[in-house]
Image (cartoon, rainbow, N blue to C red):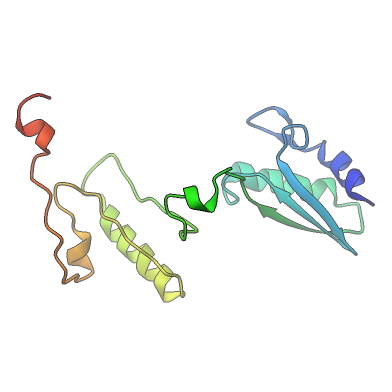
Length: 160
């Protein structure tokens, strides 16, 4: 099997959101065959989401009757150069959010950061609660960088 044979088989894999095959949609970044292994890089946004997992399973199924071992990776080309990146050394961002207060967002965020740090990750935690950030208290932060006003300035002058 060569690269074109693999691509031909991947035309049977349909993206459920776009209703066309992953090759025609340009979702196959690369196909590299190394002996008995085919390495396929897919342009998927979230590799562990249910839709992307289903696509990955279909890719494996499309090649299941070959003698090739299939390894998959997922990446999305952003077109942003390293100089243009807002957070150039950040590999992953996890947002913890809710439309309701008092549901444990800060607790989840602190425990998630602590768990990742325990596993060797370098983590940063940003508490965007403008009315009462709790994270500094939860992590016993000694530094004080000031508090935001209780009411944003655009609301204080009565113009909103």
